Length: 173
Image (cartoon, rainbow, N blue to C red; front, side, top):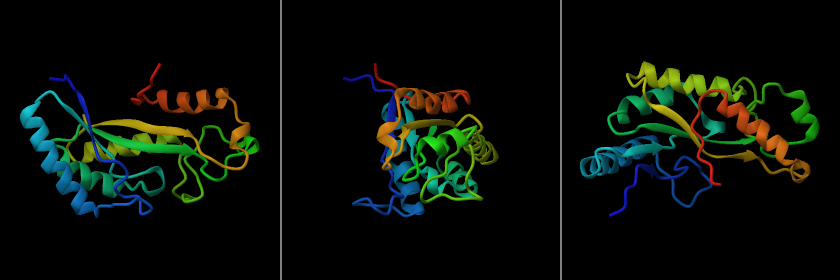
């Protein structure tokens, strides 16, 4: 058979624009059902869940999710697309550090990537799972009318904004 270590438990089930969504309770139930089955067959498996996106990130929800699924979930996956719908060169120049604002997420929920990562880690620890990791399986410069003007150097800046917080980011070479 295949030696698979990382298992992803669905994608953006919270996204109301998707073809199928789960309620919070349904996603917890699915993670537990499949997570227990996977871990029973492959005890070394690492399970990744995506309970929230950047625009709907809430500490209390992450804490409840971690408390309910921590027996099987090893990583919380976030999807961050910098400045969705509002990415411009001028906007980038104004931001240090880069923040998670986009057309859906405005102040006071606008935080730096580091603040979001820290908040997720705190929520997991407060739920009794301080070892639950944070990873980003989707990230980039979000689309806007100006985003095609950005170079690879800005993508590197976004990447470094996440890596500086010891975040796991899968890359393909």
